[in-house]
Amino acid sequence: MDVEFASRMQTLGTETAFEVLARARQLEARGRSIVHLEIGEPDFDTPPHIVEAAVRAMRDGYTHYTPAAGLAPAREAVADYVARTRGIPVDPGQVVITPGSKNVLLFAMLALVSPGDEVVYPDPGYPIYESLARFVGATLRPVRLREEHDFRVDLDEFRALLGPRTRMVILNAPHNPCGSILEADDLRAIAEAVLQTRAVVLSDEIYSRIVYEGAQPSIAALPGMAERTIIMDGLSKTYAMTGWRIGFGVMWPGLVEKMAQLMINSSSCAAAFAQIATIAALGGPQEAVDRMVAEFRARRAVITDELNRMEGVRCRMPRGAFYVFPNVAAVDRDVRRLAAYLLDEAGVACLAGTSFGPGGEGYLRFSYATSPENIREGMRRVREALPAYRPAVPAGP
Image: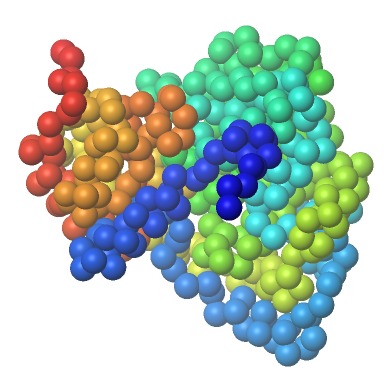
């Protein structure tokens, strides 16, 4: 039976990492050996005290509905955590707990962005920003992140994008896919520009704890920005809890009400036992997080060194998250073709930079959220496969 789908479905994009993962699993099912460097998921187990808290919660009866914005103790734990890590006062009434942080992004756009409003977002950047902005009918205003500027926002270009129709500015630091951060001076300049408009900032801080030197400040801590900023965060990356589907947003109380209304109309609430585990994660021992970040720091050095030893490849040292974004334009600017070759011929799953927007042309993204042994094996395969690769269009001088 042929079914005609609603026209809005044509506006939704996808997350290529899951498509490449599916293709890689198909090859593995046929007996191929695949090194997975495509998916952004820590390869660590959820810390045991968090698991125990969830098991205990289920046994204690936390298996039913909760208030749409979350259990009061869980919202208090999030408020305390964000206040502690960002250096800002946060009331529990500013917190919404969601089944995954993507819901914070979706609900914010549904609540704030009308058709024709402009959304500024990074390019390259997490593809769901553009996908959901297009879905709600926004006018897209990508701001290019360039290698020569350490993949940070060019402030002059950013200011030029803002106008009377700008409704939302999306920031992501540490950044996926580039591994870059935003300096304090960057954030001050961005805040000054935003405060001259009607725009709000959605600050995606999901990688905020995975920083290798210093800390990534939050724009919400700057004067006048607390009432203009939605902090989007969650437990997936920091606590190796991707499958738990726990995210949270911090925002002004009026938006909390709209978010709760959208939760009621969609997921009802986040899982009760996972909210109890959130209390244990955010308020409990943090040594497991520190060990994980230290391990990522060591892996970062391995993969960056390996890539920079390859002919036609250069790679900046990422400052946060767990991705490298090497420039492979000298090999082929058609990085979708190159990524497909590496998967099919070398057995290495990675992502084309253009999966993150046009600004990713000439780049690949590798995740180093896997063991050093896997990283070295994957890089060996890439190094041995590249000399036999022939681009469809020869690279220029």
